[in-house]
Amino acid sequence: ATVSNSPPAGPLLLIPPKKSKNKHKQTFAMKLMNILSLKECQSSIRWMPNGRSFCIVDSKVLVEKVLPVYFKEAKYTSFTRKL
Image (cartoon, rainbow, N blue to C red; front, top):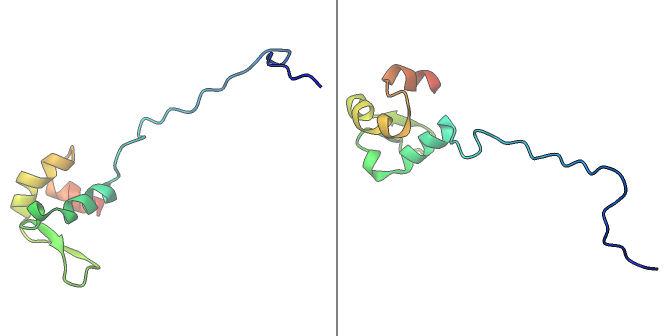
């Protein structure tokens, strides 16, 4: 038997992979988890001692310093609505 490296007869159809616009986009939950893991943000938002919930300690600092870095919309009401 001989091995042929020639392409198969007929047209070869290549289907490109679907391009995802949000391939590396972080979800709200992912961003929130990142914020909660940062020591720099603990003056405004942090985990409760039981580790099952979090609290917003200082909403003013959260809105002025933290939200603009991680979210397009840096409004407290928008942030809480997404929760």
